[in-house]
Length: 509
Image 1 (cartoon, rainbow, N blue to C red):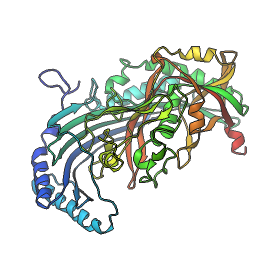
Image 2 (cartoon, rainbow, N blue to C red; image 1 turned 60 degrees about the horizontal axis):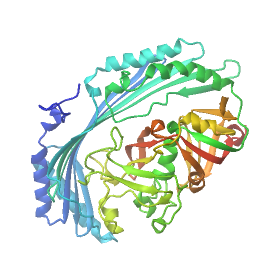
Image 3 (spheres, rainbow, N blue to C red; image 1 turned 90 degrees about the vertical axis):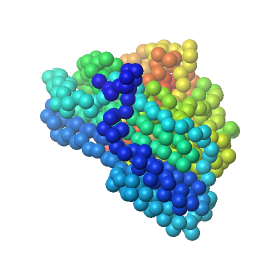
Image 4 (cartoon, helix red, strand yellow; image 1 turned 180 degrees about the vertical axis):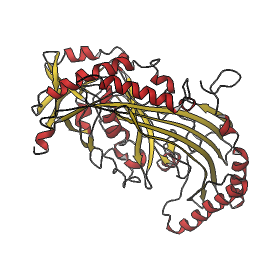
């Protein structure tokens, strides 16, 4: 069970609270003030991660690691300075503050833009814990391995499955933050990523196919694996038949098709073509080395017809169980929900305090995040989500309106250019639709489009009952590279006349 306080609320891990959080912060903040900074913030962070991998029911690897340390970021003479350390003593914290100021001093001569931060209310001393029932780190590694083994053996018992890979990645993240304005935050969040992949091999031809569970990663606890939240039994039971059918299915005929895209696939298209494209630092060219810039440049704010009029996309750092959900970001900003695309029109970006001030956009919407105590916060992605239609259709109703099309389920590979504009995506499985009915699976399918063509071809979105929060643990950005967890919610959606490629033919085979 989770740690709880006297009122029964989820509570911060006592072993984290036992660290000298405030003494270290006080020492660092005071030393930076003494050295004449305009701004200073302090983070003490502990990130615990556990990874279990099984192959054919046998444990291949088990990793349990802690990353703990402190970081000080300053603005001095309009220039960033940053330093980090692992010695958790007040004297060491003060030295890290001195080092951060030294970095700012040395960097001043090459700084071309004065760093100024958007105003943020002072939030006092606040605590936030994510929504979960059972801390996965209170469950033994043996119990978790046994669960993955039982799932694997269940699939291997079917003659249509030849190999099974099962993984579980879990993270518990604690952060203590304090800044020179007076905001102090203590936070804890938990997340899980379980996956099971079945493999079928044709011994005569060497041809093989895979089928992976489509259960998304979540900001939940171990209850996610026990059946209390998701029906794992039902999902695992259908995999052998789906895999065998996929192996025997015909290769797609390339051309133009209407698509119904399931949330288990569409979340990734949202991530790549909307989420990254509407990070303001990327749109302004401040982020370019890791995965490029963005076609959705600042001059297009309020004018770019990103998609059809039914397209409404929000950024949200508050969504329950979202992977990017937190109470306060790594700049002390209280997190929020806001519009990015409204009625198909680009109306907002994801911001940190520097980007918000740079373009006179008012307050930051809470998108600063560092993935470890050794890294400086970057502007990172919120839970960017496509909204459902309040009275929208079911997935089956969407399918019934298609004369000649394809239904796409589950994510797989993807490719997108350096401006987040030209892309192609594959999936776990593709179903042929004829006359409003699914008539079987297809193989070797990829859909290809430009971002604006694709989203402007969206003719219908499903109702709230089709909405699913998908996402990823490993969104990459920055140099040195950082990873961040992020969720993307969406309903099933209908897209007209999308170009379909045959991946085997495209590979010249």
